Image 1 (cartoon, rainbow, N blue to C red):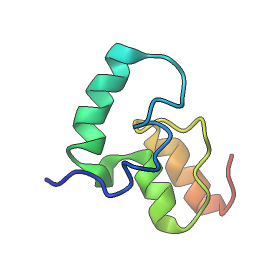
Image 2 (cartoon, rainbow, N blue to C red):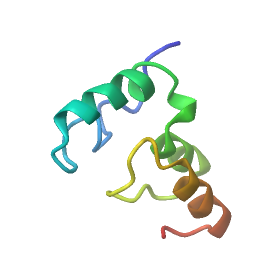
Image 3 (cartoon, rainbow, N blue to C red):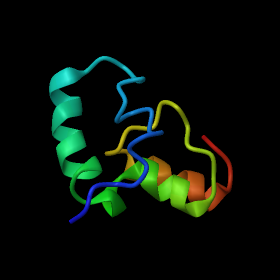
Length: 73
């Protein structure tokens, strides 16, 4: 799997979100450098909706709700 093309602008990948270094490193490996399609942030961005600044890669249920509602929740 290839790394995500959104790395340069992603708030999560660039450590602009809550300070959770150990968990963040694990998520970056899994989502950003692994399966970007499983990333909640990528899902929302790919749908054309604005990505909430507090959305973490593992929040897929929230991502699905944002996409379904058409607005950030």
